Image 1 (spheres, rainbow, N blue to C red):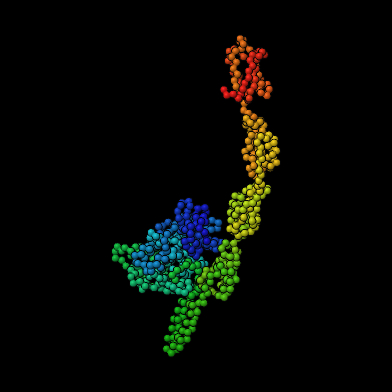
Image 2 (cartoon, rainbow, N blue to C red; image 1 turned 90 degrees about the vertical axis):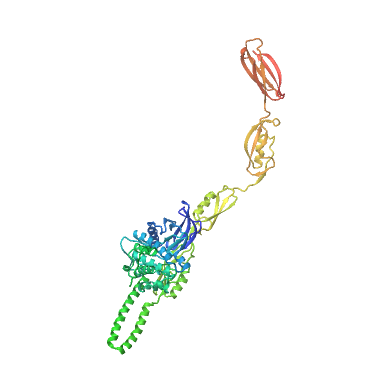
Length: 635
């Protein structure tokens, strides 16, 4: 079973299960590409490895996908996803015709005609495309909420290019609606579908099935041997022409039935809205019905019983002639003896000792073996396979369905579950935990994260998993990822580095297991040049070991610039001008030394410094001017 939220082929999102059949499960889903609701028929898990069932499933898709008709459910897509085979169909919100009959009982003439015409129209289109449905029944007819009639489930349909199809080893069909030729396993053609529609029409007008018995075999024999009960005896309000249409569609001999769906549709149309006087001449001659795949044993049983009844009839006529010849008295004695003999023989043949196969799925092999042995049946394991749902050593699939009648000593072939497949945990050590999570999800595990400190493995990197790599687990089991947080952090206090030299600051930081970060420079009026004037983290702040502290080193006071103006050259037209500046620490700085002409006057010479200083101006190496400069004064 698919869970809600599963997405097939990255497109179809499962919403909920809406139906279940013999071979498949139907889900309501959303097509994320076209943003519409659809129905998805998914082949059951137990049949996915069976080529025959996969083949039947693909036949349905191929058959129905080739049809386009307002009374046939549309097929949108066919595909497979991880060994899941599916068909995407039109979603019909409504109920089946079977449910409608159960709810309403006998349907009116007009409702029966309208619904039958819709089904016949669908069959006409299918037959025109050489497709025989072979499983027409009310369960396969959908009535939408808006009243539309849709035929579905071409799961056992066959494609033909001729008039008939010869039976295969297994006869398919729903036993309560199966045609006599299908029950015999002889052949099936378009008229077989019309017979099944006739039985469905009988059920519509009477509210019940024409043939019912204790076993599927007995019901099949009734279709072969017994005439259809007159619908008018069950429903006195049935239109006589409609009754004759039903009787003609359900003739035992196919040559007496309607030759085509178009012919049946024509009579139904006249019956619905008669435009002229017409009359359809009568031809002389269990509530739920799951699709039945009859085994060779069941087919042979039907054939044998049908032939034996004919032989018994011949014997009876011979005995009657002998009785006349031997006389009345001898006849009485002989008839009595023969009657006892024949009754016993006929009873043994017509009422065989049928054994009904029990449902042994989900049982242990020993339990199933015990039950089958007690019933006179055998069991054989043909395969063992992994399964996520059915427990180990329990029966996953049986080749003959429950309630199928078989002979004594029949062998029931079974597939036994090996339990959920064990998967190997992948190795994700030394990977980033996000990558590790993805790897584990892809491996169909559920990752869970735990963290711890590690002296050597960087933060965010996987140390190990629990269970460890290569361990075998069930799909969907949790795997714990142990991820590193990096080394355990030890806390230290930041020292006071203010007014320390850079060398002293580096030494103090090293003693406290801290590191020097970025070093920059800045002016300070109070801190001497080369000493620390700022640290990014305040003293006595608690930080982890190895923390980086940025520092700012003093450039001393910021120099101020004054401008010296020279307005003349002491009467000369040109002179060598030299200016010396003596800072307050006595250091001499030459700030200007060039030949100057009178045309360049007045000459402006910038002088920078701090505090106070002395400036001496020389003209041709003679002192021209000398003055004090105070850089602290505000100009």
